[in-house]
Length: 345
Ligand code: ADP
Ligand code: MG
Image 1 (cartoon, rainbow, N blue to C red):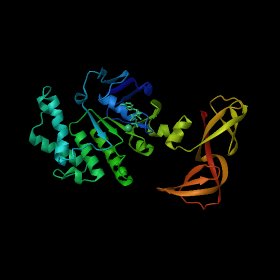
Image 2: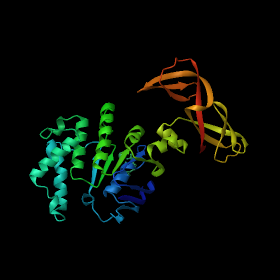
Image 3: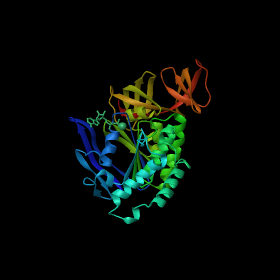
Image 4: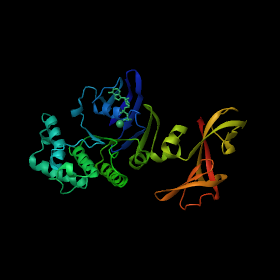
């Protein structure tokens, strides 16, 4: 399968990607999650062979792909802007992927020299998969954004690539369209068992689609794991903030007794146990999450915002919690918080 080994890339001596290594297993969807400018698209271009790394290797089945040009790597790409051919019909856009592949592969296998009748069947199959049955003759310019992205997906799927790469594919779509397509995409990837790398800056999208998340910060993989693992244990204040996990509270260690610490924060002095070693005076970041057990904090409700099936409630002092029922603004409420230390602030 795909293995990246110690990939680094700089532009004008500014490091953009530093020592990136990861693998993508058969049928696995790996999501590269990072802020805009963190090097995600550059990494995809390197994997696709459109750009060379300064150091490191892109390997498939243990073989370095450095000498393999992009059109022979057998990887499919789907972009945010669809990159469809506006002058071609839906059919011809999808068939394009097949024709490119049969041209590239002609000398390798006659089997893949798709005859026109087969091409028709295959395009139809692909359009079925992406829920665009009967769209063959439509002009792509007459389609909605969501439909255009489905055509792009069908075009990428048609040649049965050994890897699919998505670069912020839903970035241009509205929320409902995004949610629907995301669900379908996940089902399609699992059904076809094609391994995929999905790039986004949107943590909700990442959590919804990924089997495994790679959190990219300034060109370095900061955290890697299944969505639930990363959510339950973000391991750094930056990751917790970026993912929107609980509340990150900064504080200063004011007392140490074995593994017991007191930390001065703007919420008052918090008492906790911690697996790290801290000295008095050290600045630390704490993660506070509403929980069934833990420390009880009483605070007034400052703001309530509806957030899908829950209410996002801001308490005086800045803590945020999610509740199923909206409390009244100004009311005092008690909340239990589980608290953990994320290490140095
Ligand atoms: P992301 O996709 O995460 O937003 P990119 O991979 O597009 O990040 O690139 C991040 C930064 O790398 C860009 O903001 C730009 O400064 C720099 N960069 C990318 N490609 C080039 C290039 N060809 N020449 C110079 N700088 C580049
Ligand atoms: Mg990008």
